[in-house]
Length: 486
Image (cartoon, rainbow, N blue to C red; front, side):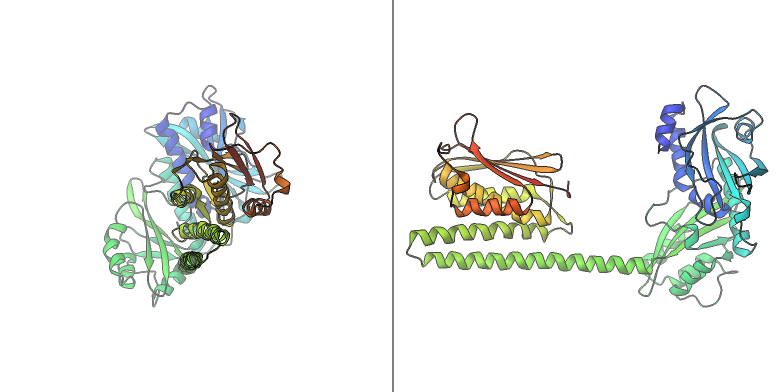
């Protein structure tokens, strides 16, 4: 399905400011759709033919049945001059018909609302109301329809939507709870959900007939909330959270006006207590996971220290070398847990891990020569369940490069990561001795290479070892699939 910006770019010649206004309308028109129980379609005038209109956006109500089964976005219609969309566009007035019918014979009320900007009509919003789906008249329905009529008038006069815009994830919607106030801020209607939200804040009695700002200030004993209320209930749209120990309620207030005169506010409110509690639980869980990674890192460092102490008591050079390799392997895993302890994500910025591994290899090799370690390219984000195995494999390959490729002397070890579609390809390159011509990787008994092959195989990847094209040094290549953290 095409998006509104694409339809505007392909079929209209609207300037940037008017396009931005129409996008703001679409971002906020859920309030009009839900209070009017109507489907909304935004029709954009063709840049060349005054009778051709393009459907740029469409929305169905959450409060009633749809009147339009098909998605119209991206389609064009050539209206007759006397059609209500054309008439609304040309005459700059709201046009209404009630004799339209769906394919099944269901009556539909239709309003065509010109969207005006600086005396010019830039689009037409159609309201399609399924008359069979309108609920039995009551206080809630009457309030909704009254608000819808005011919003329709504001949209026509170019003063709706109001700033600042709502946020997609946290802003309340009509179904969450709705409060209507008059020009003096006195509540004239509160939906059952809105009343329940205020009850959780500690309200005793009814909301209707009370000044909403005063009631809210009384309930919101928190200093931060109390000091923000006077500004929040000024003449611009505002959004706030009443976050008390026993409950949390999200409010969004929008001023209403008719014939350029204020007629009160509509306040949407949602009981966000459960959402707040879940967020707190997630924060606590993230903190616990971070602490676990920190403790694992400390324990691994303790193990490495114990192995290092043990190696100093060994007389056998082979045993000392084995313990030295074990220390490096433990430290490489500890580095991953150290970085995981500093983030709440399930992914690791592996460049930092690789740089620390290179630094560790350089420190170990300093006793026998000068080794320069460097990274060329970026790993990006690597899933946590891949990072530990990958760090251990890279550690083994770097140590092999120093011990065998550089023969424990001086030289350069370079790590070159790159993304290839859904794969991560890592080359560990040294500029030391090439591999013997009769080398058979499958028959090698090296513990380090066995560890690399096992780790890479468990990750579903591949491992190759070969001489550099220029004949100096060796390149070890690890390829692993990466499905997350890109």
